[in-house]
Length: 372
Image 1: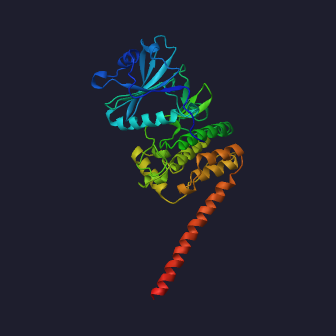
Image 2 (image 1 turned 90 degrees about the vertical axis):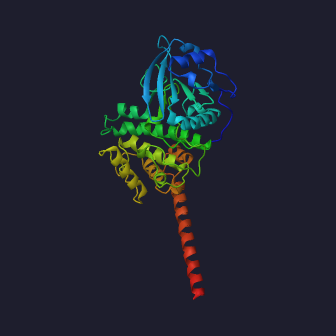
Image 3 (image 1 turned 30 degrees about the horizontal axis):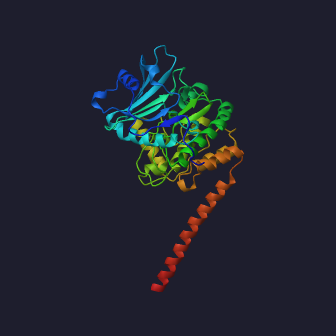
């Protein structure tokens, strides 16, 4: 998939485009203290987003995380809503990076088929960055993004603790969902972006076009290789991230494998023990992920298609070199057969490594004999 023309749903503005009075008024109403920050400028604007509709607004807090706060803003009669996300002090560096990445992704035609649509991106010299998501989040029926994957699975297939599932239904759902997820991941990777925090809570359902889309690029990297930093959510983090070495975009494919496993079984991977406290749970996850023991996939429902089992095994290979790309996974899903080329690639890679090791061993033995 290639990056193409700018998305027609968005206008991309230069950094000298001043924020209008309507926008400033709404920002003031929702509690943004403009006295301590230089007036924000507009960087991107959705054609369907109008601040004037929210001059008389009501606000409800949606959620608060380590790095930022999200509030939902309703117009006076609550017929329209949007969510606004702005950073806490410790989250400003992540928001600035998210700003860059969203701007880059949204400038590709069709981007909003894969990532959440942004109504407005604002920024200031004092590192104030704000995203206004036109329609964005779960909970409110009038909002176009109806729910995230975590809530959907809870509601449709599993009890509150993910202990039970209706296998046939969730496998049918998985076959459609996995294809859309792989398309979205392939899109961001093709545009040189690694998400690094893929999990059910960061995948939203857009009821306008019936698609699942990626959100929350706060921990994303503007690159696909030589990445650093132990970032993400422990349950979905790839083994190589825990080893504190450089890694690449294949960390997202491990996360996709974890998500698919959870969709099919209602459970995290077997190496995640959620019956312990949070600290112990993370420590045990790190221990098992760093070990050479393969992930046990015997817990998959017996009616899981063989090609999906094979694909999952490849995604959850602890050696990132043997993991498939999103494009390869998508080919497997579309063909509905075990993707033999992936197995061939694994065998070739393994044979190549073994050949190099054997060659080096023979070379050292030969040199040692000559020295004697």
